Length: 251
Ligand code: SF4
Image 1 (cartoon, rainbow, N blue to C red):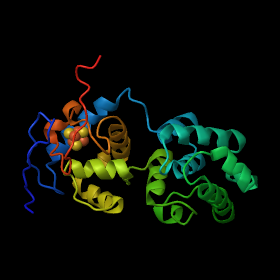
Image 2: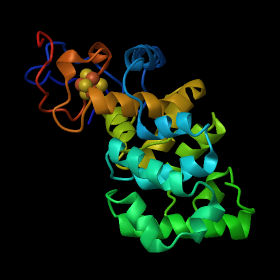
Image 3: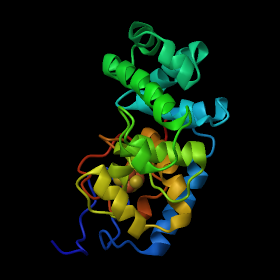
Image 4: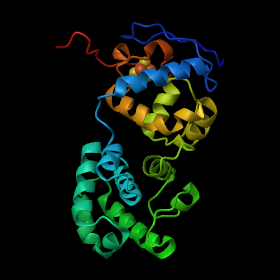
């Protein structure tokens, strides 16, 4: 397939799709999109982890645990479960003392709550045994904690430690970066590596916040609202075949 493949606009999308060089995006186009998203998300509801970070003074342990709980779970459910858990126990020592049953009850109904309860308790135990109760600040160390994958590790580093060296790629970032033609990647891990080459480093710590917020509000997994999208002129909408109902004109 030609890297400059031009495609027709899907039904319902009024703006013609721009031509893009997939995986080697025009830096000016990336810059325009990110600047516009920064404007657009101002005032939108923050993702759960950002809210937890704000309310807990960016406590690394609580950011880590909330991120672990957030996998495949609605933001509102993650926020409520984290709030209940941290009201009862907010340090590795306190959480390690809770019974599995207590943790399950506190975090229910997050998805896979039984597995996550085991991971939360085991991660707290390992932090106490190996790291003196402190959250380590490298990806390599973080992924040794039970239940912690690359996404949880990078988000913890960005949100809790202010890292500017990492991009956190979840399903929203993976999907939207591919639709925008910034990357052509099959998995979130591939997308993360491709984004280091495709975007300027000063945007890395913001990519997750911008694209997750945009993914929850506009560029949804199915039926993205391309007709309402502020960056449609810079988006080739790769892989998008059906768009959602426009809210323009709705009162
Ligand atoms: S909503 Fe449509 S136009 Fe906007 S970023 Fe997503 S795919 Fe591109």
